[in-house]
Image 1: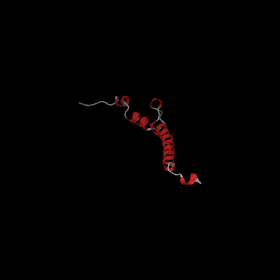
Image 2: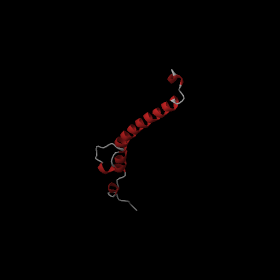
Image 3: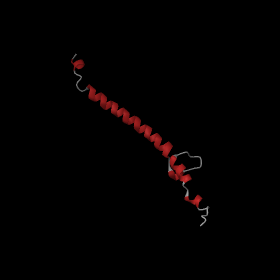
Image 4: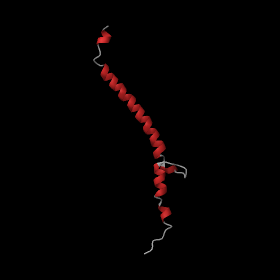
Amino acid sequence: MSLVKNENGQTAVEYILLLAVMVAIMTSILATVRTRILGDSANCTPASRSVICNFERTLNVQDLRRFTIKR
């Protein structure tokens, strides 16, 4: 039973595997966040709810040209 007593590298292997699992989970979550929240600013439709499209609709310069400034 020399395998049971030899646990010197088991903790290091467990931490490396735990780190690999956490990196895989974070990568998949960040990919989902990037597509749903940030979206594609070139393809903004009126129904899109991404943050970039909301900023683009709010700060549209062409809409501000209709207003006149009284001096």
